[in-house]
Length: 203
Image (cartoon, rainbow, N blue to C red; front, side, top):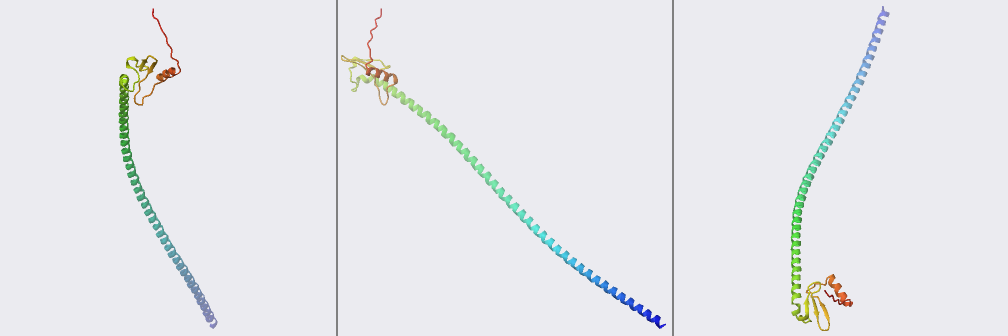
């Protein structure tokens, strides 16, 4: 009887020890699980913080990007306005210069026409003066021949003087007028003694 009781007590003690060991293992497992849970929670919090920081950094970069884009748009808008203004000013200046150029061309044409008229009038005056000088030459002091011995031809030589000792071809010039080519040719023939007498009888 005592043996059975001792055996039962022994069994109970073994069971209690086994239960205590199991409880200890369960507590250790719980502690380990709790530690792992705390570690995971800490890691999760760290990841959340990193994610928040990354999001804040991303938001900051996006905000700066939007600000930079807005600044570039404002600068571009100002440049476009400046370019438009300069193009308008250049257009106005070009129009003004075109009008001035047209006025200058018109004035130049008028001045050219006026000069042509003046030159024409001057030439006409010179021609008239030459004709007057040719007509009045025999009565002027510079004329060294006897007017009664002079015969007016007009072209190509103005006068021929028939003096007792010589026959002279006379050309009257006034101002800066020069001999023409025909008159120079006649002058050279006379100087080279290439003047001939020809008598023609008409039956």
